[in-house]
Structures are given as structure tokens and as C-alpha cells.
Length: 456
Ligand code: NAP
Image 1 (tube, rainbow, N blue to C red):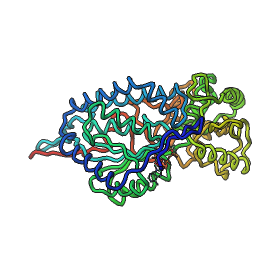
Image 2 (cartoon, rainbow, N blue to C red; image 1 turned 120 degrees about the vertical axis):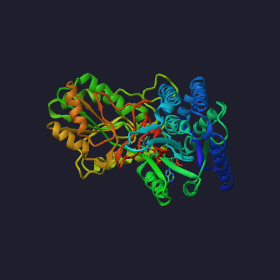
Image 3 (cartoon, protein in one colour; image 1 turned 30 degrees about the vertical axis):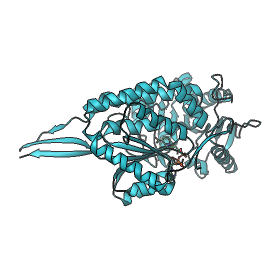
Image 4 (cartoon, rainbow, N blue to C red; image 1 turned 45 degrees about the vertical axis):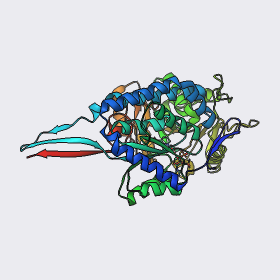
């Protein structure tokens, strides 16, 4: 019973699911491959679009039920779950509406003959997805690839099996043929075996560095393309000319959204000396106001973490940081006297380079605070990280913001806001945050054959 829904607020186990047998996995792969060769790749864009538009519509019709399922399985505040469902439907619509234009044949300027690059699908793709945004993560992998003519198989995280099944059901109810979208409850050995299978033509993983390294190595051994969307420790730079009210508001939402369990959450707050006290005072006051409560209750502001293990790990990271000399400015431990996995909003300062937490991702409501003398020091500290996912810079001088953004070694930088994800903004990182992009036009070009056709 490796796939299990455990409510992070009540700790009750809602449902458990068996992993597939090897025979069941083979049968599903066979169905997926047949769907690709016999049906899906030959559907025109119009037909695929009609089906995916129906899926997006159904997702909106089922918004409340889907949102409640996510909150029950991984603990997100209900309003944030509702927002995630809406964003996921928007991603599906976006690719339904734009895929044909994104993948239009590209005639080449050539001195001799006529040449064109056409985008054709690769076949069966395999996605390994995380629990933190149980619909959005899957939508941003499935929608572009289905519209490109690929079929997709998904191994979702083991703590969100009901969300995984609900997404698959949505696709079936929308009328997609069996095998176009397949959910798989797999063991890690089966993940490896599936990547080895010659019918699987590409692999995408969103998750931790450890999982990314395992899955990408397996893909590499098989000479298959992979994309990796991994962790981050995004810097949030506040320059001396920032709009302070805006910076504080964005700092709080950037750190606390999804109870801090976002790869692009703002994690390292890098503030220029001139405004550091002002920022810290307001940031600390706002972080202290969060109230733990039932995530189904609209009045709750602090959600539980996704699992008891996640809470243990985060609390341990904070204790280790303090043992290595970090100063606790707020919080520091779990909320006592509740069965929910609540971590108090926490702020740590005085973090030296030899403190383990300096290079770690903190997946929860824990902020690292740094003072720096000037802009150059802020950029240097932002780049002093194994990760390279996102980052933010706050200044009222937009040109200065762009200049600083260009110097930050990440895949995304946001001027005057915390990270946002929208269907038309490419998403992905560099360094240990992975490679490849999802969303926007970039997201549909990862798993297609850019085929040259030249006529002499
Ligand atoms: P995780 O443990 O890596 O899990 C992610 C997925 O990988 C799950 O489906 C998991 O399955 C699977 N997995 C784990 N180890 C595996 C292995 N050895 N072989 C095959 N599959 C394996 O990630 P997490 O800690 O739950 O999720 C949070 C991480 O994801 C954070 O680091 C976060 O920053 C990152 N993330 C990145 C992005 C992005 O877009 N860059 C977005 C969201 C999250 P099981 O559940 O069965 O273990």
C-alpha cells in the first residue's frame, strides 16, 4: 500500500492503493503505444483542441470538488486549491488554443532548394510529478505534450493518489481515447523499468534533486531526452529604493504561499543595510500573524505541511541551522497541541557559509534573512547557491531592476514581485534546479522531433 492519502490536518488515512503489477504496467504501456500509433498522432490539431477544451471546461465544472480533494490530500488552504484548479484549466486551454501556431512548420531561408522544419510528436512520454501542486504540475506536462501529438503516462507522488486519479478521469470524461493520458501507481523499480522500455521516448521529472538525478541517469543510460524541474532557494533582493510596503507584502506571500512548499518560493531574503531594519520589522510582524487552522476553513491562514515526515525534516533543518550559529528571529518549531503538521512561520538570521542551511532548500514557512552592504553584494549572495531556479528584485527604478535581474544566474527573475507562474511565462531553472522549460511556447518544443525536410 505505497500510495496513500493521509489528511495532513487530521492524520486520518482516507484511502490506499496498490501499485500496479508488472503485467498491468505492460498492458497500460501497450494501450498507450497503440493510442499513439493508431489514433492520437494522426488527430489534427482541431480534434485534439476540441478534446482538451472539453477537459478544461470539465475541470472548471469540478473546481470545488477537485480543490477539496487536494486540500484533503496535501493540506493546502482551500482558497489556494481553488486557485490551482483554475490555473490548471487555464494551462490546458492555453495549449489547446496555441499549440498549432507554436508548432507551425518553419520554412528556412536557403540558397538552394526548399527547406522546412516540421515538428512531429515522439510517442509515449513519461512524467514523474510531485504533490505540492497536484493538478498544476500535471497540467503543465500533459497539456502541451498531448497537443503536440504525444501520449503521456504519469507517475504522481505517492501521497496524492486521489488527485492523480481525478486528473486521469477528467481526461477520460472529456473523451480522450484510452491510452492518451494514463495514470500509473508504480514502485521505483517500475519507474526504472518503464524508462528502459524502448516505447517510452522521453522523460520529464518535477521533484527533488535526488529523484531528478536517479531518473535522468536512467534516461541517459537509454539515450533518451529528459527535462528536470527541481528544487530552488530563490533570493528575494530588496534594494534601498524599493517600495517597502510592496516588498514586504510580496515577501510574505512569496514565502508563505502553499505553506512555503513551492520550488519558486522566496527563500533567501537579501536586504540592503540601509533598509534592512525597516524591512525586518515589518516582515516579522506580518509573518507572526499567521494562524494555523483547518485548511478547509476559509478563515485559516497557516496550512499544515504535506506530511509528518516533511514537518520533522524542516524542524530538524532549523535546529541544525541554530546549532551552527544561526539566530532565530521568529518561530523555530512546530505548533504544539495540534494533530496537524503545522510549522510556525520562522525567520533565521546570521547564517554563515559553513552553516548547512546556507546551501539547502527549506520546503516550508522558514525564511533566511541576510543583510548586505550594496547591490553588488546582493547579486553575489543571490548567486552563491547550488540552485538556479528563480529570484526577485525590488526597486522603484525598473531599469535598475532589469540590470540586476540580468546578473542573477537563474531561469527566471521577477522585478517587483515574488515568483508567479502563468500559462504564457516559461518556467524552469539552471544549475541544480534542472534543465528544460515548461509552459509558454518553450514548453511544447521539448518533446517534438524538429524534422528537416529539404526538397532539391
Ligand atoms: P520527490 O521526493 O523528488 O518526489 C517527486 C516525485 O519523484 C514523486 O512522484 C516521487 O515518488 C518521485 N520519486 C522520488 N524518488 C524517486 C526515485 N528514486 N525514482 C523514481 N521516482 C522517484 O520530491 P518532493 O520532495 O516530494 O517534492 C518537493 C521537491 O520538488 C522540492 O525540491 C521542490 O522544490 C521540487 N519541485 C520543483 C518544481 C519545479 O518546477 N522546479 C516544482 C515543484 C516542486 P514518491 O512520491 O512515490 O516517492
